[in-house]
Amino acid sequence: MKNHRYLLPAGAFLVCVLGFPLAHTLWTAVSGAASVPRMAGDEILAQSVRVTLAFSLMSVALELALGLVFALLLNAPFRGRGWARAIVILPWALPTAVMAMSWRWILNDTYGVFNDVLLRLGLIDAPVAWLGRPETAFASIVLADVWKTTPFVTLILLAGLQSIPKDLYEALRIDGAGAWSRFRLITLPMLRPAIALALTFRLIQALGVFDLVWVLTGGGPAGRTYTVSLYIYDNLFRYQDPGYGAVITVTFMLSVFALAAVLSMGMQDRRA
Image (cartoon, rainbow, N blue to C red):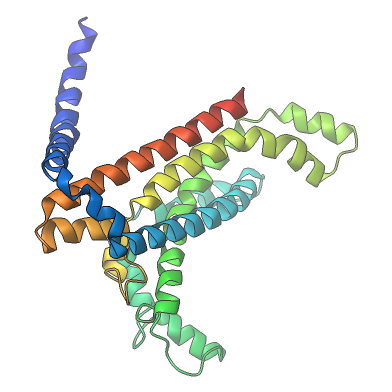
């Protein structure tokens, strides 16, 4: 019982930071429950859901693929591996808003370094407004998110790789199995819990993306990067409709929790 008193400050902090805002959101959603049917015919909400799902699926898929490659490379012994691991963490360590502002300058059509490099290489004939065109703005936010959060996936998968017993590889190597066979029979099956964990965390984060898109495009152009979080923000602060914004928030939150529960159960099944 004496040790429990040390948990009281942390518990009180969590109640203040999470409990009160959550209770206020739920209360506001209950007050605005009459606007629930409005969601079914809300085309802007439907479009933002499509954008959010497409962004989440594309970015997370790329991050898992690149994270696995980088984790395998960083798990192999080579000179300067410690420095390489430290450098890989840097994009993830940067605040998202700061990173997004940097990408906004890089992709600027007038003085951005990305256009300058492509022009020097002869790959384009004129500067491209990467964040101002519907066909390129979406790809730009996916690129920025992949650059930012691939290190996070890499760290999780690297931890999973280091937990695999080396004896298993030696046994297959003695039996004459090649690198691909060892990866398919040992690495991939034993790495599935780490992959499921990274997938769960990244999907939850990607579905709730706000600051990255807010800084880079603000949801434009033509709503091509308008996510659910931005729509909730606009309803709460721009349109002054907190009831409807809270209803969308609670519905979206419950959907994300359900997805996380399904992924968690799938991960437990794999372990079993």
